[in-house]
Length: 551
Image (spheres, rainbow, N blue to C red):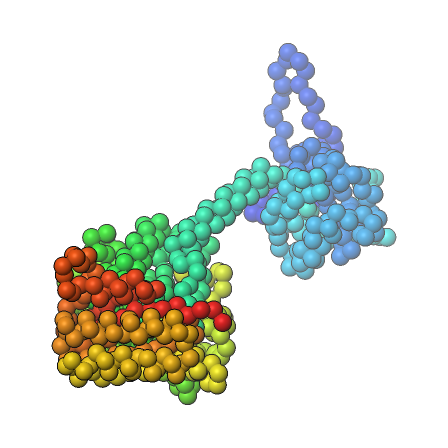
């Protein structure tokens, strides 16, 4: 077969199509003698003689049925001998298996070359296939032009040129595998810095989700946390360190650890942020973080919070109305020298609150408010458990694995309890006017309440003793107004006494001759836990808890 009459049109290359008289290969120079005459030009070589020696796979396909008109030796070695001019379904199954038939059709229709990168052959080698439109000489009955040189018509065809890129493909796969391992390591690091299991307080149902952003190996600085403070109160935290990378994650880990330490001091939210602001400045003055620290007290029905430049908390109340918390109560952490303040938003039974980072609502081509409105609409229609609400909000805002920013979402619900469940959550309170009669009144009140709540005798007696000691401590060291509060949940009994003095008690060792100093020691001995905190207005609260026996 002679292909000197047609000329493949390679992309970006022009070739002359004048037929030359030279029909043979260029004679090789004899050994020991210099070649005579001018060096042969590429266009003087017969096309088939060139293609037969090309290491790439070459095939010429003819017509819309893609009959094979020519294959070179490398193609035959890769796929075996192919009968020229046979039906397409018999002569080119390898191209069909590689998914190239639609590409060949497209090349014929458009007249433009197309390339498919790195297709792996059954033998394990990888090739890049370039398909270029060509004009193939044919006979009147549709076969390829015969060898006798008779001039025949030409039909559209496709030149398939496959270059071996196995080394490049293997290197690219190793690189992708390395990037996958790096990203998995980065995500594992990020997740290890987040709480492995959320604390679940008695009065709230809580769920959280974290979605790392992008496909690169850079970790982010988003975090969240839930911290039980005792006395039925719960701290909820969410924050975002600006930027990405290991440094942002390191700062995030230090801030999260510090938050947990400061939370144990049971300080007001704005004081916690003040401490964090100073710490962030010391850790890295170039790193800035936003944060919300909120405290829920079931006795108050409100969420008291402080926000350091963070996005507003959203609350859906028991009637389904969406409320947006006021603007941030202070600048981001790490700015230094600013005073933060606390604010509050109602969180009555039946309400749901959402804390989130900016990756959930911020888009590069839109204002931040344009992301808050869809979030509010999604929260208004999101019902179910906190985990279900988390998932629905992520879907509604279009957050997927390819999202370009980290996203953290914390959802908490204050369930409205009815029926038998409500019987497990009870409150009782008594105002103490002071004087010698306050202690016996407190003991009688505590005894009556615990009896009505049907506590076992041993827990009843411990509760009465604890109430008596807390009231006695307040009478001796505190100032009016004084109040005794008893609260039970499905898991614990909480006894709390408040007064108007802000000096916090501390546990100390009483000497044998001391008449005082044993009350807090007794509380610490008999109770599961105890603590104290300052209250707004200059007073304090001292509380203790008793774990209830499992039902």
